[in-house]
Image (cartoon, rainbow, N blue to C red; front, side, top):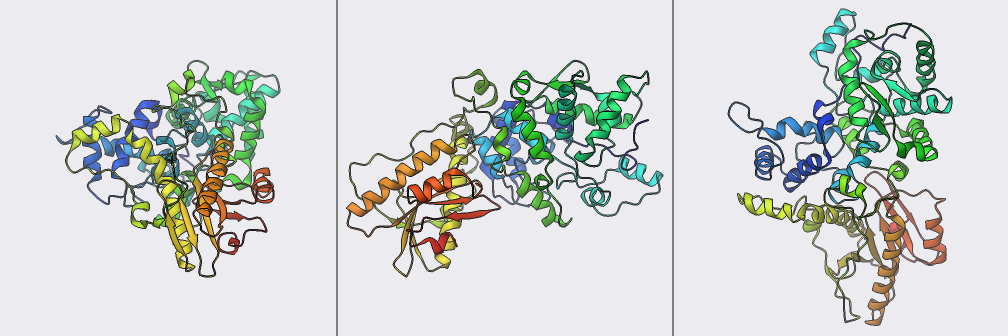
Length: 506
């Protein structure tokens, strides 16, 4: 007999728009939203008009007016690409949204990481729908506040994608048929409150397979949601359809079992969950802060066999994978021309202007403007945040558009050159090598121009643990500082010889 659900009407709700998307539709939809980032109102009509003009989606008319954005914006928030406009009034892309536009990760990688990290409760699914409220009232249960608050009060802390992955891995390891039907999921996995309950679900599946019990009607109200979850998971690198209402592991997952197993364990670790601290809009915003950022550990799911010539890239990277080209401007002179930083420009949300010229905007997007812009936005925001910190310390901050990202000189005479790189786990090594060469060159050219020597620091937008070998290599071996700065964390590592370290590696 299957265990009871955590509460009457419990299900794994998911946006229905998520199951029908494909790489180009998702990318183009976000691409049409990006030009209006930072706008407080009126962007829904502009995005809808741009989508129609660019041929992304149909108009989806309501009461005679196009309204495609209203129908599909939920999808972008569901995948952690934008902040819900119910939480943040201004249209705001997450760090992950910019990474996706910039070609830092592909469609199936995005779906894989987010589907395995997506949990209940979360900050996106916060409304208690009438159907659920009716079921709760029938069970004499009163649910006050948001769905997020109610699920937390019921002890729910579950990642459905990870639970499905765990059960498939255990079936495979024990030599059983490694597939999971929709009926088995709705009968045996839906009752789990936490991922740690997988052994009970696993045991029930094995017992059922040795019986003649019909479970088709068990938790039937959840069937549509389970089917939607299966369809979403099958757009990742880890899962595929094994027939009607069946899910199984892909050949890629089977050929990389050690990686998949370790990633499953990572997502089951107690520290990998988002824990709601409050249930007001600010508390929900913290969900998007968390879900819209891929930690260094999370990025182990990114594939290492990605090249621009591969069929995989053609299928999953709509604008091509990000390359490792040197972005600096060639210089025949050793001089460095530092000028004051334009903080307002660095903090911009978008470089586009709608200005009624729809045709021009469509053409700029066709030429890849959104990819170039997404790449620079993350880079420039890091510079701005560091610069503002140093200014508060009394420093003078400057840059050279053709070389130095950020130069800071403090009142005590100490100074440093900062080279900023946006990276993923996959691109870390190549971009660190590039950054080392650049910061060494800039320090040399500046010194040759007669300036006092300055400390050299590389900044990356991801976390590294203190034991990472790159830290010792950079600081002790090369004498170059390293700052690991993500939206939620900051750590500075310095060699003893760096005199400015008290300002950026306290």
